[in-house]
Length: 505
Image (cartoon, rainbow, N blue to C red; front, side):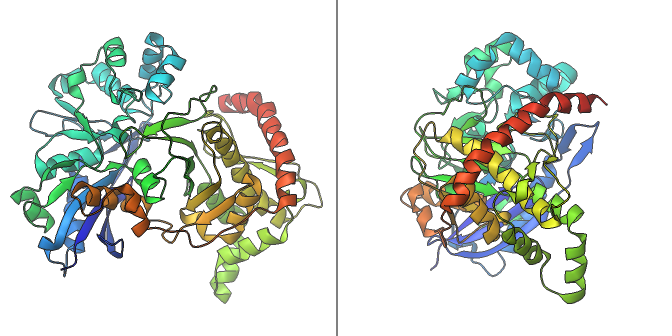
């Protein structure tokens, strides 16, 4: 009988349930959506009961025509850096404060008033920020003391679903490393940080390996999900680290670039990469003792989507009338323009910037426009802009590990033109994978398989993913981009004060 692995990927907009065989074949996938509540300018919350309903609905759809007894294990990938306060019975005390919520700026300042920023970065692998769980928990403590007093545990999205399935409170090392309360050098909750900010360590659940079997699915949970009671539930990982494994980054130096709306470059190392400018950060890997240095920029695919929507209305209308793909028309124009976009630069900071700038006031900017420049020049400059920003992140990675090639995945990896520009800017071979948009689900499936012994170790992700192409750099283009990168940096540095003043208008 064929054995299956079930992966749940709890994202920002919904839960994606995917069924794989233990041999790495993707059988089917389904998505159940849920709402996100945006309010008060920078408050962002979700109802955890919506997660559970989505998991139940997607599980039942996934299991149609499948023998529940054939499922070897279920595991998870989930949105990171959130704060869900539950009582001793696991009942949520308030909505979940998700990763995108930035209300806790005062609490970020409170943390940094008690611990030096560099010392904090060295302990956790991350900057102290309102983005992370600890600052959000302090906001609850400062603003909702009744909720805080009743809080027994603070959970992430996947941790809550594990509790719903097994009745157990726990998290994994990767999600723990996204709290700002976890010592990445010791792989344990940081008493130094928690004592400094006055938070009881007992509020954080036991941290375990991603491959840890949290328990068996209860009869009630199994009935709601259409699965078999007793099905092993494996802890899984935060979505960024699940994607790391799903991209095949399971040994030191294997580096990948996820090209989604945002984009990140990450690798696998034995030690954190501590950048002297704190431009990048480091997560705990799915393999205990290994870590995943990472740098995330805000808008890569999002910059391309903005460009398509705002600058390419003609291409959209033409394909509506004549058929075909607007993307094909856009990419053909990009390909026809030489490296450098005939002198046009684009700074891709349409939503401020995380890595490498860490500047919320940064803005998207075209530079160098002349009368002879064309529509196509501007299109190519957008791609070159986010490629050069990614190159800056890659250069930080290269200070700690020997990067020989870069694996790519995500929606933008479907464009040969984008991948060639990346190869030319990076000066490295670019390798797209057979599955471009399943990395987090694959990582969760691998955790499930290893957890129950259906897979020997996470290196068996090779059953699931493999490179299906190679884009090598054009030497002359790479020489040009090496020079252009210096000007790209100089342009940003020259505009920092302008951006700050614009933010005050």
